[in-house]
Length: 418
Image: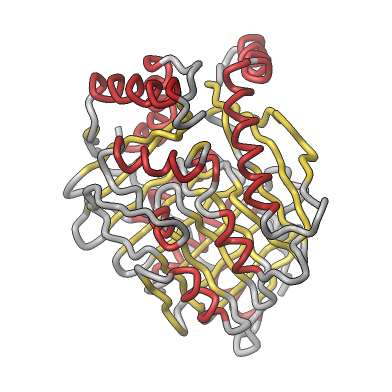
């Protein structure tokens, strides 16, 4: 039987049906979006040999758990408390552990149409046949779900103005300020939601993580950090513009995004922060910015993305790279520690998995993690469904426009349930 996958989209849909037989499952795909750094078109993990979960000493626990094995999972934003002297006391309705990883029973990939598995106890042809012979049924519409904003518009606007007072005083230059939309008693099938979300957005860092308690359905466009051999790559996003069905207007929106002084200021501040983070664990003189202010077009938005690379110092390890760059600068602000203190003060919910990192670590210690944004997080036991969105606040920010940008990001997902 051929091992070649001709239609990756159909294969993903079948794989999601197949995943229902496992209590733990993770699927990571770039949806064949052009990416010079990507190693796999699709990577999946099924079953669980070991589960690694922790609320303290997260990075030490992850390093100890690696044991030259595949690991798939997430690091919550609140693991920041193990990096700096910080805390997280805002209301938490998801209740996810700060660190959650699984050593899977089955790991497989699709790259350039070629299917491969990395477990000698399973035969590739048998496993592929099992997935390909799944008969897809017509997708049922997703349930109608009404979301509630945890923060009123008036309160959001007041908080942005208060944050700008901190900027005016010189406490910070930029802060990523987020809000939550949530639904209670949301009865849904997580893999069906992810399938609909992925088809709608086709993002370069789509991720579906399913466990007995928590499901993450992510349409992230942003790479947090990748390690391949000794090369590190981070691709922070700052700058968002809507799409238009009118081609001329759509091109104008791209141009406005690329030339916007405000968006460029936001982007370059975070690039400098990422450069500083990576310089702490990089070989001397190896940090560089091969792309600054790149405009990337996705199905729902245009984004301003920059690329920062570095060579990992020979005396540093893969866990040093994660610990010294976490949380990602695009979701904090600058200076980083003061920005995180203000995030805790001004936001009204615990971020948890949102704005954390989700991805894999391979047996050699190479990894690729996305930023958990444009994502739904679901507690299956309480049926609590969370969608958080945010944006960068600088002295140039207009509070009303920032609020509308939040709605733009949220609406692309909320439409699935209308």
